Structures are given as C-alpha cells and as structure tokens.
Amino acid sequence: MTTETIKNYTKEMEASMMAEYKMNPTRATVKVIAEELGKTEKSVIAKLVTLKVYVKATPKAKSNKIVVRKSELVAKINAHFNLEMPSLVKATKTDLENLIATF
Image 1 (cartoon, rainbow, N blue to C red):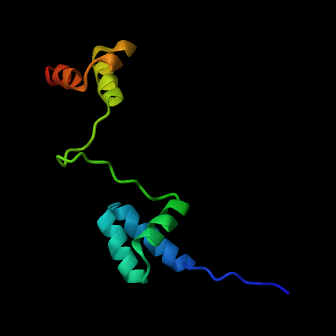
Image 2 (tube, helix red, strand yellow; image 1 turned 180 degrees about the vertical axis):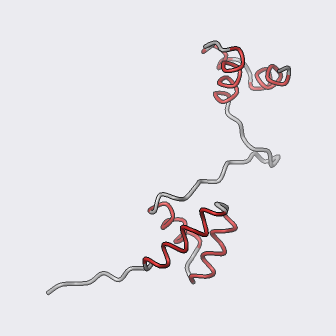
C-alpha cells in the first residue's frame, strides 16, 4: 500500500512564485503572491525559503532608519584607509559614523 503525499504547491505555482518574487523581493510581493494563491504569507515565505530565493528584510530601528552594524562601519573605514584596524570595533558607533562622514 503506497500513500501519496498531497503537495501544497504545484511546480507551476512554485515557478510563478519564484519569478514574481525575484522581480521584486519585498514583503508586499509576498502578500500579493499569498492572495493570488490563496495561501498565508507565512506559508509563501516558508516555500520561498525552501526554494532558496527568499531575502530576509533589512531590520530597521524605531526611527525607521536602516540598522548599520559597527562591524560594517569598521569594514568601510579599513577599506578606505587600506588598513586592518581591528581595535576600531571598540570605538563607539557615533565616533565611527563621524569618522566616515569626513571621507
């Protein structure tokens, strides 16, 4: 006795979902896809993750600015001066941002 598993998404659904999401990888696109397919947004996101095409949204601070990590700031400074200065990570984020503003 063999049991067949019922798939939530057909190959055609997967292909159209991937194509649409790759053109505009945003949460709004996920919402549109979910409405078109009659699925939840979480289900669509899970499927896009499984298909290895989902791009996690960039976190934003409460002030609605994109969060920039100190390590990214240090990498920019190191690249600008063409040096490796690992101790810069110990500087405050504000000081690092001020230094980058002078470039």
